[in-house]
Amino acid sequence: MKLIYLATGPMGRTEAGQAELARRRAYLQRHAARDTQVDITDIPSGPGSIESLYEEYLSIPETALRAHELQADGWNGILLGCYGDPGLGALREIVDIPVVGAGQATALMASALGRRYSVITVTDSVIGPLEETLRNSGGGDKLASVRAVNIPVLELRNDRELAIEATLGEARKAIAQDRADTLIVGCMSMGFLEIPEACQAELGLPFLNPARVQLKFLEAMLGAGLSHSKRAYMTPPKLAAGLASSPADLLHRQN
Image (cartoon, rainbow, N blue to C red; front, side, top):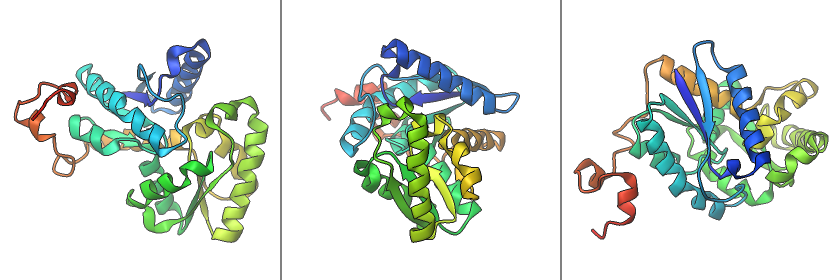
């Protein structure tokens, strides 16, 4: 199967960003099944990182248009490259291939592994939006808390050890104060830095890496011959009726 990770920002516009895309692709390919090919792409414009609901919304139009192109290019499934699952439902409306969001995938997996899970994310500004996303994920009834290390996304890789220590600190609070028995890092950058793997042995609890869980969730979906329900995620009526030729055309229609 051919899977593609769709970053929800213009990561490749700098040399450092291109190197990070390549590193993330290598991580995903390393953890993929033997018969799975994984690639990675980004969008031409949008926020450099997502640390607010406003930035999340800004990322959706270009991400949706790119998803439609990827289906036309023959990819079998899309990994939506932001933990907050920006525009997940909208992407599912305009493509037939499965689109998996890391937030939903990890919430469902954590719900299967324990009774209460907590998410450790980047900044206080995304706690509220993530709580809403996770409560609508299908695993929301087991959400114990969302906590933040308060390190901006673009600064995480500057000091990985600091990020690990901050994550451990919030994780211990989640366990002691929120009664969490399962943990998730709520940021793809934290996942690709393998912060859960660095913390899990010390904490003694399942600590989910969204990049890895999302990948396996999509592989399982495709392996079972499944995709999202088009009864749930209906094609936009103007597209279905042929009144718009593409998702981009919907931006310009007056009726």
